[in-house]
Image 1: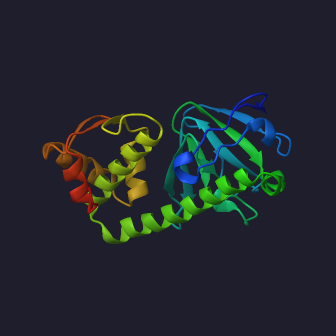
Image 2: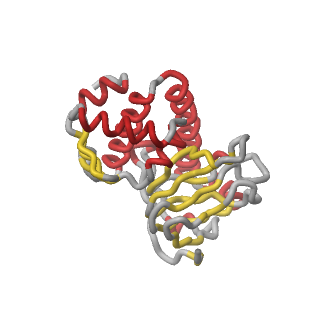
Length: 233
């Protein structure tokens, strides 16, 4: 994995979330920004490493991983363009989880002590980082509710709807997309077995709610999928 300083780029906007954009040239007055080129399977950072930076996904798709009590890797989330990484470790001496690329991409490293200073000078950056922390809290809450209250079919349906929304936010089709993660990664995140996830995906296909071919998914009946997941249309 290579890293180098950014020369001239613009940070991706997240206007749906906090209504702010950030000019990278202004940011670089306060924060040294480094680019990390990623290839599939490469770790951006590991759980337990000293916490020193936040990362912003500029391109690609990553998974976050925590070590469970029994020593197994537990997938805690998926991140794509515009998402911050490392926010869950703020206030800790080490990273609480690791981040691994699922495809080729790029992440921008933002040293955290300098970020604190930049937040004082750039209200729009403070707003974006606060929004990222709030999303992390909401995501954790939603995940706990999903695991605690939904059955296997509902969990998978909810996951597919969330992926559809992610695609739509990035300007892609919410009806036809490719899952970047393996079924085993989905299973880990949803606290299901790999076999259960495969069986549910096949059942949703047979019910004509989705059409699935390997990792390619077409949503055929959005309303029925939402109803299954217990969501309002």
